[in-house]
Image (cartoon, rainbow, N blue to C red):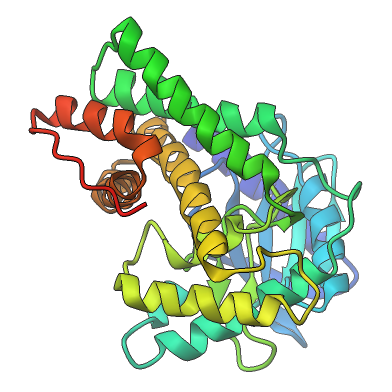
Length: 341
C-alpha cells in the first residue's frame, strides 16, 4: 500500500493538476474524501463552478491504470446507462476528473419499501447494457480468468484464512466441482459484464437511475454474472423468494429484448445459481486477501453471508456434494445431503 508520505505527495500533485485546468474550474483546496475503495484507487469530491461538485479519481501507477476506466466509461455510456462523464484526464499520472453522481449508494437507500423500485431500475439498466454488447470490445471472461478466480478460494480462503491443508482426495474433488462450474459458466451466452454490479457501486440518482460506478474491470462474459452480483450481494441479503421474483422479472425483460437467455426459467435459474457459486467462492478468496494482505478487516464481517450463499447453493445440487463435505469437515459438522436438483 502507499505510505502516508506518498499519499500526501499524490494529493499535492492532484491539487496542482486541478489548479492548472482551465475548464472546468475547480477549487483544489476543497478536496475531501468521497469514498473508500478495495483497491489502490482513491476518490475525492471537489467544489467546482458551475457544476457544484465533481469527483476526482487518484489511481496511482504502476498499481493502477485509468485507461480501462476511460474505455469502459465510453462503451457503457454509448449503451445509454448512466456513468460518470470524464471531464479531464492525465492518463500517465492516473488522474481523472469526473461528473458527480451524488453520495447515495443503493446500499444506503435499500429497505423493504424501496427495494423493488431500485432493483427494477438496476435490472432494466442491466438489460439495456447487455443488449448493446459486442464481441471484441472488452477482454474475454475466458476459462483461464474464471479458473484463476476460483483458485482464490483454496489458495487464500482455505489455506491462508482457514489454515486448511487439503488431502489429495479433497483437492481432486474440489477441482471436479470447479470443472462443473466452468463448463456451465463458459456455456452461457456472452455479454458485457461489469463484474461488481452491486449495492456499493450503484448510485441512487433522480433520472436514468442507477448511476453506475467502478466498472474498470469489465469483461465480455456469462450473461448471469451481473444479475448474481446484484441479487446475491455480499453486503445485503434478501429472502430467496424475492430474489427468485427479480430473476424471473429480469428473464421476462431479457427475452423480448433479444438477449440469448435460456428458453425456460428453470434452466436460466440454474445458470444463475452456478454463476453465483463461482462468484462467491472467488469473493471469499478476495475478502481473505483484503484482510491478510491489505489489513482491511471490515470484509471479515461480510464473509458469513457469502459463505451462506455458497452453502445454500452447493447443498441444492448433487454435483457440489464434495464441496458441502469439505466445508462440513472444516466446520466439524456432520454432512447431511438433501439435494433439490
